[in-house]
Length: 83
Image (tube, rainbow, N blue to C red; front, side):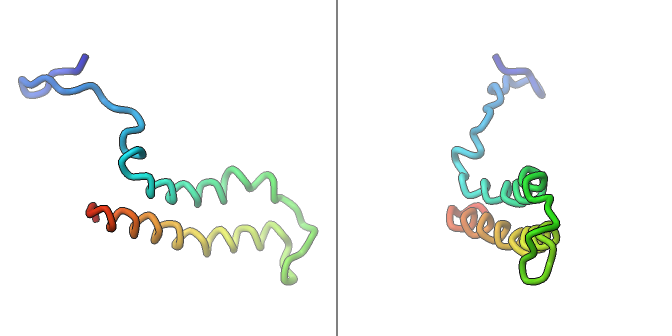
């Protein structure tokens, strides 16, 4: 049952409705996954990649991929006529 606001009955809130209509917004979860979820898995000094400790390389890679993920979300949203 909805709630009342300004004398009108409001529909009940829909959970997950935004992601069903706009799945390209899932690209915005990529930075969180790269930084927070995968970080304990890559907390290593060895091996080195291009002379950098693996953790430093991972953080650099995540930093460079974040704008790409935001661009993909924006492009997908724009294609649907929302931006």
